[in-house]
Image 1 (cartoon, rainbow, N blue to C red):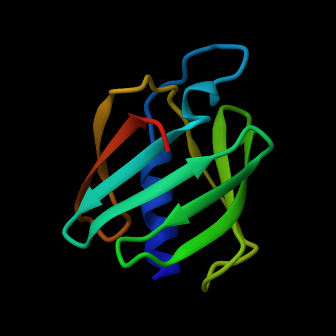
Image 2: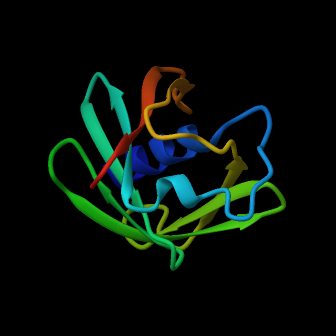
Image 3: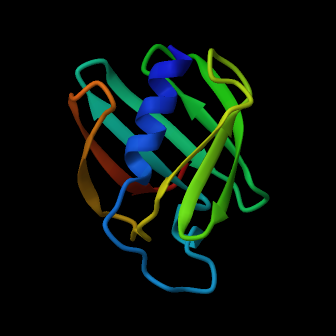
Length: 118
């Protein structure tokens, strides 16, 4: 399941361009990124201190770290088959209320959203 979560997290990070700002992740703090696909809703919580938490559709929680590097959002999960492996993808700044489509590594589609609150 954690491999699936990493795939979902990576998909949320894909984008064609980044918007310049003092802190491009600011809209994600105190809010939730959701990924909805056939398995249900995965929730991702990014913290300003570079830590993150994931909650899979089955309720399984995980933790990790994130960092911005050269216009990419890099995530390293603490659990699962990819634990300790950094995964970086292009980043787009998002506003609360935005939704976007993502294609997962296995070719399936998911709907991502940045929703207010945690």
